Image (cartoon, rainbow, N blue to C red; front, side, top):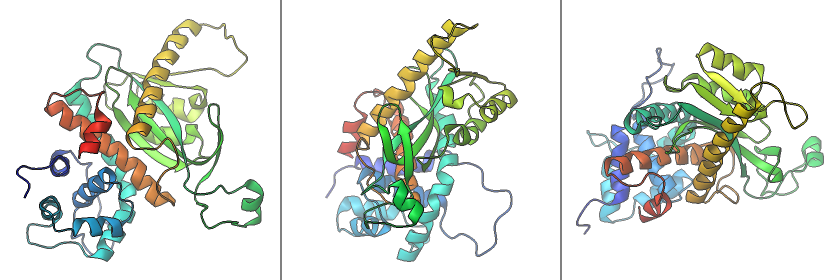
Length: 328
Protein backbone atom coordinates (compact mmCIF):
# COMPACT_ATOMS: atom_id res chain seq x y z
CA UNK A 1 0.00 0.00 0.00
CA UNK A 2 1.45 3.41 -0.98
CA UNK A 3 1.22 5.80 1.94
CA UNK A 4 1.24 8.93 -0.20
CA UNK A 5 0.78 9.86 -3.83
CA UNK A 6 3.77 8.95 -5.98
CA UNK A 7 5.64 11.49 -8.08
CA UNK A 8 4.38 9.94 -11.33
CA UNK A 9 0.76 10.24 -10.20
CA UNK A 10 1.40 13.87 -9.20
CA UNK A 11 2.84 14.67 -12.64
CA UNK A 12 -0.15 13.05 -14.34
CA UNK A 13 -2.53 15.10 -12.17
CA UNK A 14 -0.60 18.22 -13.18
CA UNK A 15 -1.76 17.72 -16.79
CA UNK A 16 -5.26 18.75 -15.70
CA UNK A 17 -3.91 22.14 -14.65
CA UNK A 18 -1.88 22.75 -17.79
CA UNK A 19 -3.62 25.13 -20.23
CA UNK A 20 -4.83 23.61 -23.49
CA UNK A 21 -4.93 25.26 -26.92
CA UNK A 22 -8.37 26.35 -28.10
CA UNK A 23 -10.40 23.68 -29.93
CA UNK A 24 -10.93 24.02 -33.69
CA UNK A 25 -13.66 26.47 -34.67
CA UNK A 26 -15.50 23.80 -36.62
CA UNK A 27 -15.78 20.17 -35.58
CA UNK A 28 -14.75 17.64 -38.20
CA UNK A 29 -16.99 14.97 -39.65
CA UNK A 30 -17.65 11.70 -37.86
CA UNK A 31 -18.80 10.65 -34.43
CA UNK A 32 -18.33 13.07 -31.50
CA UNK A 33 -15.17 12.46 -29.48
CA UNK A 34 -15.89 10.46 -26.33
CA UNK A 35 -12.51 10.80 -24.63
CA UNK A 36 -10.79 14.22 -24.41
CA UNK A 37 -7.24 14.76 -25.67
CA UNK A 38 -6.17 15.56 -22.11
CA UNK A 39 -6.75 11.94 -21.10
CA UNK A 40 -4.25 10.77 -23.72
CA UNK A 41 -1.79 13.50 -22.71
CA UNK A 42 -1.86 11.97 -19.24
CA UNK A 43 -1.16 8.56 -20.73
CA UNK A 44 1.72 10.06 -22.72
CA UNK A 45 3.31 11.34 -19.51
CA UNK A 46 3.23 7.78 -18.16
CA UNK A 47 4.74 6.47 -21.40
CA UNK A 48 7.64 8.95 -21.43
CA UNK A 49 8.47 8.61 -17.74
CA UNK A 50 8.35 4.79 -17.78
CA UNK A 51 10.00 4.45 -21.23
CA UNK A 52 6.94 2.83 -22.83
CA UNK A 53 6.72 3.27 -26.60
CA UNK A 54 3.55 1.48 -27.71
CA UNK A 55 -0.08 1.29 -26.54
CA UNK A 56 0.44 -2.42 -25.80
CA UNK A 57 3.30 -1.66 -23.37
CA UNK A 58 1.25 1.11 -21.75
CA UNK A 59 -1.80 -1.07 -21.18
CA UNK A 60 0.32 -3.97 -19.90
CA UNK A 61 1.91 -1.72 -17.27
CA UNK A 62 -1.37 -0.06 -16.29
CA UNK A 63 -2.94 -3.48 -15.76
CA UNK A 64 -0.53 -4.35 -12.95
CA UNK A 65 -2.25 -4.79 -9.54
CA UNK A 66 -0.33 -2.10 -7.65
CA UNK A 67 -1.66 0.92 -5.78
CA UNK A 68 0.17 3.29 -8.13
CA UNK A 69 -1.30 1.68 -11.26
CA UNK A 70 -4.80 1.70 -9.72
CA UNK A 71 -4.40 5.42 -9.10
CA UNK A 72 -3.25 5.98 -12.69
CA UNK A 73 -6.12 3.93 -14.12
CA UNK A 74 -8.48 6.13 -12.11
CA UNK A 75 -6.98 9.25 -13.67
CA UNK A 76 -7.44 7.73 -17.14
CA UNK A 77 -11.11 6.89 -16.55
CA UNK A 78 -14.04 9.22 -17.27
CA UNK A 79 -16.27 10.30 -14.35
CA UNK A 80 -19.00 7.94 -15.61
CA UNK A 81 -16.62 4.97 -15.38
CA UNK A 82 -15.79 4.57 -19.07
CA UNK A 83 -12.22 3.49 -19.89
CA UNK A 84 -10.82 3.48 -23.45
CA UNK A 85 -10.68 0.15 -25.27
CA UNK A 86 -7.40 -1.11 -26.72
CA UNK A 87 -8.30 0.02 -30.24
CA UNK A 88 -9.21 3.48 -28.93
CA UNK A 89 -5.80 3.74 -27.24
CA UNK A 90 -4.05 2.78 -30.46
CA UNK A 91 -6.05 5.18 -32.62
CA UNK A 92 -5.94 8.22 -30.34
CA UNK A 93 -2.27 7.86 -29.40
CA UNK A 94 -1.51 7.70 -33.13
CA UNK A 95 -3.25 11.05 -33.71
CA UNK A 96 -1.82 12.72 -30.59
CA UNK A 97 1.40 13.99 -32.30
CA UNK A 98 -0.71 16.30 -34.48
CA UNK A 99 -1.84 18.18 -31.36
CA UNK A 100 1.46 18.20 -29.46
CA UNK A 101 3.12 21.26 -31.11
CA UNK A 102 0.13 23.43 -30.18
CA UNK A 103 0.10 21.98 -26.66
CA UNK A 104 3.82 22.66 -26.21
CA UNK A 105 3.33 26.23 -27.40
CA UNK A 106 0.36 26.80 -25.08
CA UNK A 107 2.15 25.45 -21.99
CA UNK A 108 5.26 27.40 -22.97
CA UNK A 109 3.33 30.68 -22.91
CA UNK A 110 1.86 29.77 -19.52
CA UNK A 111 5.34 29.07 -18.12
CA UNK A 112 6.64 32.39 -19.45
CA UNK A 113 3.96 34.17 -17.41
CA UNK A 114 4.91 32.18 -14.29
CA UNK A 115 8.70 32.01 -14.53
CA UNK A 116 9.29 35.46 -16.05
CA UNK A 117 12.53 34.30 -17.73
CA UNK A 118 13.33 37.76 -19.18
CA UNK A 119 12.96 39.72 -15.95
CA UNK A 120 16.70 40.43 -15.88
CA UNK A 121 17.73 40.10 -19.52
CA UNK A 122 16.69 40.90 -23.08
CA UNK A 123 13.56 39.22 -24.44
CA UNK A 124 15.23 36.87 -26.91
CA UNK A 125 14.64 33.31 -28.08
CA UNK A 126 16.95 30.90 -29.88
CA UNK A 127 15.79 28.73 -32.77
CA UNK A 128 17.72 25.65 -33.85
CA UNK A 129 17.40 21.98 -34.72
CA UNK A 130 19.17 19.02 -33.20
CA UNK A 131 19.78 15.64 -34.82
CA UNK A 132 18.28 12.43 -33.41
CA UNK A 133 19.65 9.20 -34.85
CA UNK A 134 17.15 6.68 -36.20
CA UNK A 135 16.78 3.31 -34.54
CA UNK A 136 18.21 0.36 -36.45
CA UNK A 137 20.24 0.44 -39.64
CA UNK A 138 20.68 3.21 -42.21
CA UNK A 139 19.10 3.39 -45.64
CA UNK A 140 21.86 4.30 -48.07
CA UNK A 141 21.11 6.62 -50.96
CA UNK A 142 21.69 4.00 -53.66
CA UNK A 143 19.25 1.57 -51.99
CA UNK A 144 16.66 4.32 -51.41
CA UNK A 145 16.77 5.39 -55.06
CA UNK A 146 16.43 1.75 -56.14
CA UNK A 147 13.53 1.18 -53.72
CA UNK A 148 15.45 -1.61 -51.99
CA UNK A 149 15.30 -2.04 -48.20
CA UNK A 150 18.23 -4.35 -47.45
CA UNK A 151 17.37 -4.94 -43.79
CA UNK A 152 14.17 -4.99 -41.76
CA UNK A 153 15.74 -2.90 -38.97
CA UNK A 154 15.85 0.18 -41.23
CA UNK A 155 13.38 2.94 -40.42
CA UNK A 156 12.35 4.00 -43.92
CA UNK A 157 10.54 7.13 -42.66
CA UNK A 158 13.81 8.73 -41.49
CA UNK A 159 16.27 10.52 -43.78
CA UNK A 160 19.82 11.80 -44.10
CA UNK A 161 21.34 15.12 -43.01
CA UNK A 162 24.87 16.42 -42.67
CA UNK A 163 25.75 18.02 -39.36
CA UNK A 164 28.80 20.18 -38.89
CA UNK A 165 29.42 18.39 -35.59
CA UNK A 166 28.22 14.82 -36.22
CA UNK A 167 28.83 14.48 -39.97
CA UNK A 168 26.30 12.46 -41.97
CA UNK A 169 23.46 11.18 -39.79
CA UNK A 170 20.44 9.07 -40.72
CA UNK A 171 17.49 10.02 -38.58
CA UNK A 172 15.37 12.97 -37.51
CA UNK A 173 15.53 16.68 -36.73
CA UNK A 174 13.96 18.06 -33.56
CA UNK A 175 13.25 21.75 -34.25
CA UNK A 176 13.10 23.88 -31.11
CA UNK A 177 12.60 27.45 -29.94
CA UNK A 178 13.87 28.14 -26.41
CA UNK A 179 14.31 31.17 -24.19
CA UNK A 180 17.70 32.87 -24.02
CA UNK A 181 17.70 33.41 -20.27
CA UNK A 182 18.71 31.87 -16.96
CA UNK A 183 15.95 29.27 -17.46
CA UNK A 184 16.07 27.10 -20.58
CA UNK A 185 12.40 27.00 -21.41
CA UNK A 186 11.18 25.36 -24.67
CA UNK A 187 8.42 27.43 -26.27
CA UNK A 188 7.82 25.57 -29.55
CA UNK A 189 8.82 22.21 -31.02
CA UNK A 190 8.35 20.01 -34.06
CA UNK A 191 9.96 16.80 -35.32
CA UNK A 192 10.63 16.05 -38.99
CA UNK A 193 12.77 13.68 -41.03
CA UNK A 194 16.39 14.87 -40.95
CA UNK A 195 16.39 16.24 -44.50
CA UNK A 196 13.78 18.94 -43.75
CA UNK A 197 15.29 22.41 -44.14
CA UNK A 198 15.51 24.51 -40.98
CA UNK A 199 14.18 27.56 -42.84
CA UNK A 200 11.03 25.61 -43.84
CA UNK A 201 10.37 24.20 -40.37
CA UNK A 202 10.95 27.48 -38.51
CA UNK A 203 8.03 29.73 -39.64
CA UNK A 204 5.24 27.69 -37.95
CA UNK A 205 7.31 27.59 -34.74
CA UNK A 206 7.75 31.36 -34.71
CA UNK A 207 4.11 32.27 -35.39
CA UNK A 208 2.66 31.86 -31.91
CA UNK A 209 5.52 32.79 -29.58
CA UNK A 210 4.72 34.89 -26.48
CA UNK A 211 4.11 38.56 -27.24
CA UNK A 212 7.10 39.53 -25.07
CA UNK A 213 9.62 38.09 -27.54
CA UNK A 214 11.54 40.79 -29.40
CA UNK A 215 14.65 39.04 -30.78
CA UNK A 216 14.89 35.71 -32.64
CA UNK A 217 18.45 34.35 -32.73
CA UNK A 218 19.45 31.71 -35.27
CA UNK A 219 22.41 30.44 -37.27
CA UNK A 220 22.77 31.17 -40.96
CA UNK A 221 20.31 28.43 -41.99
CA UNK A 222 17.55 30.74 -40.73
CA UNK A 223 18.76 33.67 -42.81
CA UNK A 224 15.95 33.08 -45.29
CA UNK A 225 13.09 35.19 -46.70
CA UNK A 226 10.33 33.02 -45.23
CA UNK A 227 11.78 33.25 -41.70
CA UNK A 228 12.38 36.99 -42.00
CA UNK A 229 8.82 37.50 -43.24
CA UNK A 230 7.36 35.87 -40.11
CA UNK A 231 9.55 37.99 -37.84
CA UNK A 232 8.63 41.18 -39.70
CA UNK A 233 4.93 40.36 -39.50
CA UNK A 234 5.09 39.67 -35.75
CA UNK A 235 7.25 42.70 -34.92
CA UNK A 236 10.41 40.80 -34.02
CA UNK A 237 14.05 41.28 -34.99
CA UNK A 238 15.74 38.30 -36.66
CA UNK A 239 19.46 38.09 -35.86
CA UNK A 240 21.38 35.45 -37.81
CA UNK A 241 24.86 34.82 -39.13
CA UNK A 242 25.37 35.97 -42.70
CA UNK A 243 26.56 33.98 -45.68
CA UNK A 244 29.99 34.68 -47.12
CA UNK A 245 33.64 34.23 -46.28
CA UNK A 246 34.85 34.87 -42.74
CA UNK A 247 35.77 37.15 -41.09
CA UNK A 248 32.74 39.35 -41.73
CA UNK A 249 33.43 43.07 -41.50
CA UNK A 250 30.06 44.69 -42.26
CA UNK A 251 27.93 46.87 -40.03
CA UNK A 252 26.75 45.21 -36.84
CA UNK A 253 29.19 42.30 -36.97
CA UNK A 254 30.27 42.71 -33.32
CA UNK A 255 26.67 42.90 -32.13
CA UNK A 256 25.79 39.77 -34.10
CA UNK A 257 28.79 38.01 -32.58
CA UNK A 258 27.45 38.70 -29.07
CA UNK A 259 23.97 37.49 -30.04
CA UNK A 260 25.42 34.36 -31.66
CA UNK A 261 27.29 33.49 -28.46
CA UNK A 262 24.09 33.93 -26.43
CA UNK A 263 22.15 31.75 -28.86
CA UNK A 264 24.81 29.05 -28.87
CA UNK A 265 25.05 28.94 -25.07
CA UNK A 266 21.28 28.69 -24.60
CA UNK A 267 20.17 26.27 -27.30
CA UNK A 268 23.19 23.95 -27.33
CA UNK A 269 23.21 23.57 -23.56
CA UNK A 270 19.48 22.90 -23.62
CA UNK A 271 19.90 20.30 -26.40
CA UNK A 272 22.60 18.54 -24.40
CA UNK A 273 20.54 18.54 -21.22
CA UNK A 274 17.40 17.39 -23.04
CA UNK A 275 19.18 14.48 -24.74
CA UNK A 276 20.80 13.50 -21.46
CA UNK A 277 17.52 13.46 -19.55
CA UNK A 278 15.70 11.35 -22.14
CA UNK A 279 18.65 9.16 -23.22
CA UNK A 280 18.63 10.53 -26.79
CA UNK A 281 22.38 10.93 -27.32
CA UNK A 282 22.31 7.60 -29.13
CA UNK A 283 19.44 6.47 -31.35
CA UNK A 284 15.80 7.13 -30.55
CA UNK A 285 13.90 4.19 -29.01
CA UNK A 286 11.10 4.29 -31.61
CA UNK A 287 10.57 3.65 -35.31
CA UNK A 288 8.29 5.51 -37.71
CA UNK A 289 7.38 9.17 -37.90
CA UNK A 290 4.30 9.04 -35.64
CA UNK A 291 5.95 7.08 -32.82
CA UNK A 292 9.11 9.21 -32.96
CA UNK A 293 7.08 12.43 -32.92
CA UNK A 294 5.13 11.10 -29.96
CA UNK A 295 8.36 10.29 -28.11
CA UNK A 296 10.28 13.50 -28.90
CA UNK A 297 7.41 16.01 -28.60
CA UNK A 298 6.04 14.16 -25.59
CA UNK A 299 9.47 14.49 -23.96
CA UNK A 300 9.41 18.26 -24.59
CA UNK A 301 5.94 18.47 -23.00
CA UNK A 302 7.13 16.43 -20.00
CA UNK A 303 10.15 18.72 -19.66
CA UNK A 304 7.79 21.71 -19.49
CA UNK A 305 5.57 19.90 -16.98
CA UNK A 306 8.65 19.18 -14.85
CA UNK A 307 9.54 22.89 -14.82
CA UNK A 308 5.98 23.70 -13.72
CA UNK A 309 6.16 21.19 -10.84
CA UNK A 310 9.59 22.33 -9.69
CA UNK A 311 8.60 26.01 -9.88
CA UNK A 312 5.58 25.38 -7.66
CA UNK A 313 7.75 23.47 -5.17
CA UNK A 314 10.58 26.05 -5.30
CA UNK A 315 13.13 23.59 -6.67
CA UNK A 316 16.05 24.32 -9.00
CA UNK A 317 14.88 24.64 -12.61
CA UNK A 318 18.16 23.57 -14.24
CA UNK A 319 19.86 21.10 -11.91
CA UNK A 320 18.57 17.67 -10.93
CA UNK A 321 15.89 17.24 -13.61
CA UNK A 322 17.11 13.83 -14.79
CA UNK A 323 17.26 12.43 -11.26
CA UNK A 324 13.82 13.90 -10.58
CA UNK A 325 12.27 12.05 -13.55
CA UNK A 326 14.20 8.86 -12.76
CA UNK A 327 12.65 8.99 -9.30
CA UNK A 328 9.18 9.11 -10.83
